[in-house]
Length: 88
Picture 1 (tube, helix red, strand yellow):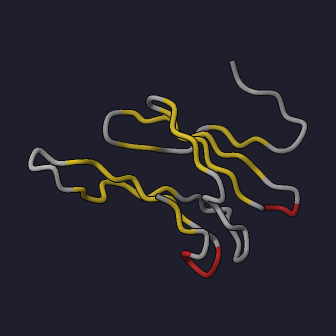
Picture 2 (spheres, rainbow, N blue to C red):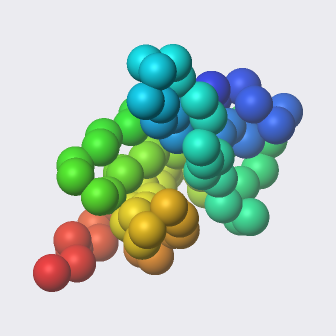
């Protein structure tokens, strides 16, 4: 779940997990330290297995952040700007 208005428009993505009883609980929050107000991090979110792909309007041209999951932790390991190639 994303909120592009969180943190004064910096944005955030919230990771939810379903418990054994069927209820949902927030288990993580994705953001990056380089965000500025109005960047709208979380504008688009794609989950593919153990990787989250999150877009923002950062730097005026937009950036895409790749967050692999390692155990219970998610940490941005790649930031793509327009014209960048996808990592292998």
